[in-house]
Length: 168
Image (cartoon, one colour):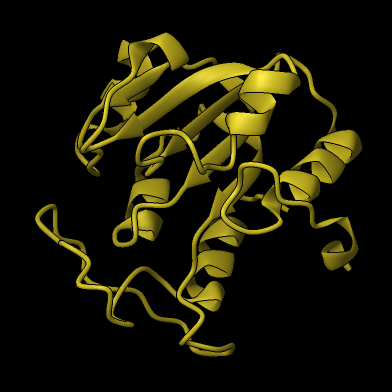
């Protein structure tokens, strides 16, 4: 269903159009996003929102920093994700949470305090593990993706976490 809304401007695939459609459905509210795993912030899920839709937000990556656009060099872990949200003043209610770190995505999302309530969660999944397989890599702060299929979590595992977090 969402494929008809795909449109790529700055996202890696057609996410720019899908995100716009979803925001039309849920509302744009405070126009705030959080995205981590953005590399240099050029090709990411929130760039269009930042540059053309009046959004602001927090972007984090463990290799890059560009404070003018709100990109901070941070290594995101289970132990520090909520501290980082506090450090950068993430509002409790915001529009978009986008996670793309090629590894501990599920574990980080699970660790985010329930007081933070994004309207939309975008998270990379491992497409090599089709439903109904529920699997994720073991959590490791030191995990480095080697470009193999050993990464992230299956769609089923992420869906189970969404249900646990009561996200629909």
